[in-house]
Length: 171
Image (cartoon, rainbow, N blue to C red; front, side, top):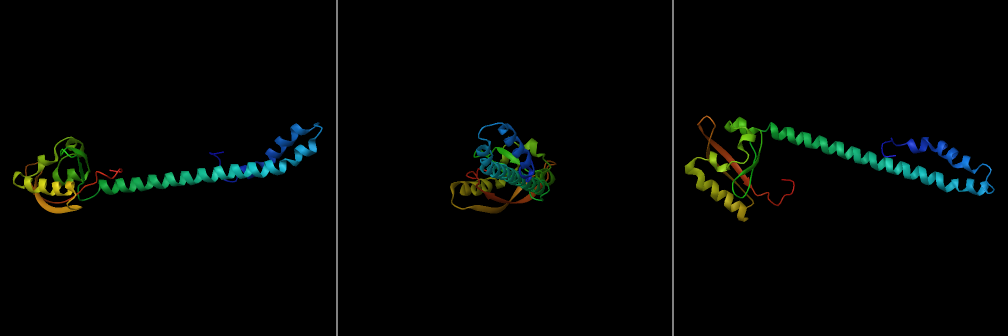
């Protein structure tokens, strides 16, 4: 079965033989019934082992995916740079943990707010222009420097890279 280790169908084949032959005792054509075991036994073992093999491959793939997801999550949580996903209207949809280390704002507190709220007013036109060009498809990505407010009021220089990932279903 699906929950059994590989080899279980093979190891349990003597039980299948007994379960198949016992009802044939006293049957007029028991020899013919026993002869069909030549087809039934290998087919049953092959199907059982195949299902077990596929199930094990699925469990291995799920485990590898979970490890990869944990690794990526750990990398994002401990990154020195912060990542922010912004909607077309500027609302923050997701923010990485590094946002708090860099700008002093908890990611959960920033979600739903306008991403431009932290941009230094004199740099807002630059930030909007960079986002606009990427969003319009003029360039694939822009890397630029702007000023942003830390939660304690300090003004920090931030190097940003803007990419349009709206068509990426994993984002």
